Amino acid sequence: MESMPPKRNFEKSVLVPSVQELAKQHLTNILARYVCPGQESSAVSIGAEVPVIDIQKLISGDFMDSELQKLHSTCQ
Image 1 (tube, rainbow, N blue to C red):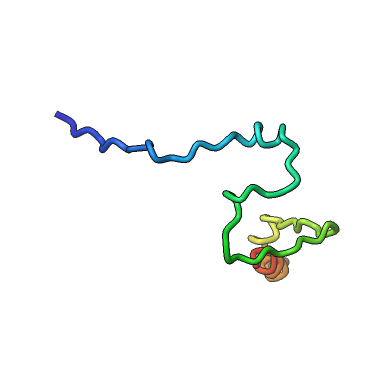
Image 2: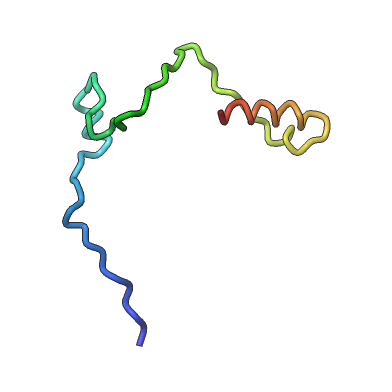
């Protein structure tokens, strides 16, 4: 006889609206449940570009160092 996986108790789960429902509300502020207390928010520049990491360059000997540097700075 196979053993049954343990049952999970979800009675205490907080019911939250779906992303689609939140989007319909046109909220202008972040809801308190999504804010981590004690964590500073960092401003994001509107003009910031999303870097493109070329996987082919990562595995190529000629451009590997420059792509690794770009990847490293992107992850920080």
